[in-house]
Image 1 (tube, one colour):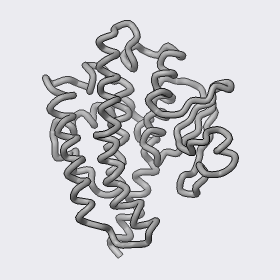
Image 2 (image 1 turned 90 degrees about the horizontal axis):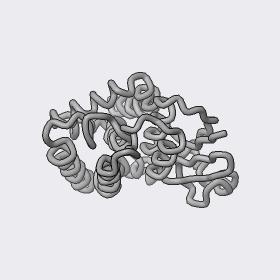
Image 3 (image 1 turned 180 degrees about the horizontal axis):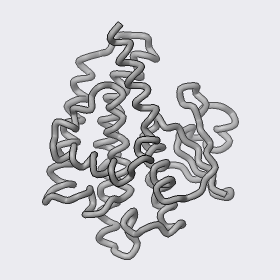
Image 4 (image 1 turned 90 degrees about the vertical axis):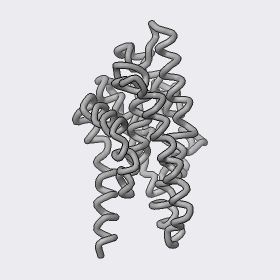
Length: 228
C-alpha cells in the first residue's frame, strides 16, 4: 500500500497530493506537521534522514523529492500519458525541461520571498527586511516573465503543450504559496500567467481548492493581524 507523507503548507507536497487525488490513486495519508518540527522527529528520520516532505513509501520502497515521486507515480500507475509522456520522447523531454528549470527559478524565487515575508520574521521574531524582500520580488517577476515568454509562448494552454502535466502542478503550487503573503499580484498582473493559473485550477477543480485550504487560512490569519 502506498503511504504518503506530506504537509499541505509544502508546495511540492501539494503538487503530489493533487496528482494522487486527481488520478484516483489510493494512498494512506501520513500528515507531517512542519510547523511543529515533526520532520525532525526520530520517527520521521527513520523514514528519511533528509527530514523533508513529500515522501512516499510504496510497499517498502521509499522515495523522496517531488519530481522523482511524480515521475514514479505516473509510470507505475499508468496514468493518462499527458501527465508525464511515455509514448513521445520529445513531449517527455519538454516536461523534464520545465521541471528542471523550475527548481532554480519559480521554486527558488517564490520560496525565498515567502521566507523573507513570513518564515524568518516569525522564527527570528524580527521585523521584515524590506530590502531583501524587494530583491526576492524582482526574482519572482523575472521567473513569471520567463514562464510567460518561453514556456507559455505561442498561446500554449499549459507549460508543456495543450494538456496539463506534472510540470504545471509543481509550478502552480509554488506561485500559490505567495497567496499566504499577499503577493499573488506578482503573477496575477501578468495576464498570460493569470489565465494559465485559472486553467490549471479549473482542470484540477475541487482538489486544487482542497489542497490549498491551509494556504488560504494562513493568508486570513496574517491579514487579520495586519489590520490590528
